[in-house]
Image (cartoon, rainbow, N blue to C red; front, side, top):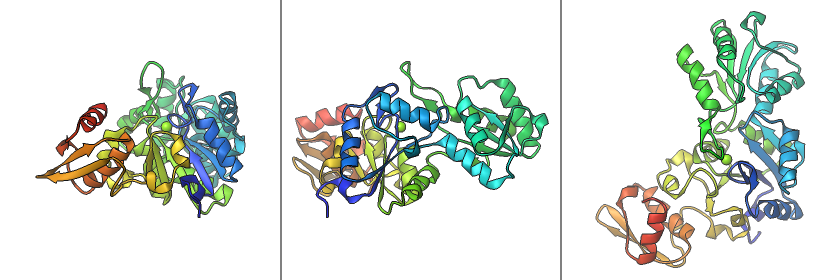
Length: 332
Ligand SMILES: [Mg+2]
């Protein structure tokens, strides 16, 4: 039995943005974490909902940030969508592509023919994020779906991170068609659907996979649906207040400030925690009082034990100066 969290797993699946990098900068410690896992013989996979880059481009991007990656280790929602469509239609079938060139390339490589008009009688519409997607191609997609084409969305992330703040993501463009057609996509491929995770596990023949992500509503929910343990890192989108309020289907197995949590003893990262160093929790009426001092993530693990059992997040109060500071830092 291993003495650190990652030692209990034979595959670690990383989400990218918010876990390994933030938009275009590596997150400190990510490259070291990957190297240490490799040295321990742990398989690595990268799973991203972003459908605008191909696996080889993602691997090159990671390498440019000092994070080692083989294209075969990278699973994108574009590649997964193309594989899924190819499984279900005849080789050479016309597929209307709404998205970036990367998605067209994946469709082509899967033995299908990308088209851009409903007049080409596509059997499927595959929709992924692309900065050039506009009304014209969305109109063709609406016509094709109405004529009976199966509608695949690579993912439904409403926003994309950018240095200027969140921008419309594929989910926002899917919402255009959803509104026009008054229906949902037939298939959503990316997280929180489990396909990227289960594919990563079957490709590496892993028996004990661990998924790491920064979003409860995609990464962690996807891991729960895939039946995998998961680690939430607090370097991206979801914060402590989100974790405290998380419904059962979005609760990770572990939480850590960053990827260094992989190399701590599992019981120091597990969530919820019944007891932690430095902090104590006392019931008071319908709420709880946090007292003591210590690592804020330990306080979070302790508090999840209360809020996940039904204590309202608004009913948490501070019984020490350090607790006041921690709760304020979380926006509570
Ligand atoms: Mg992310």
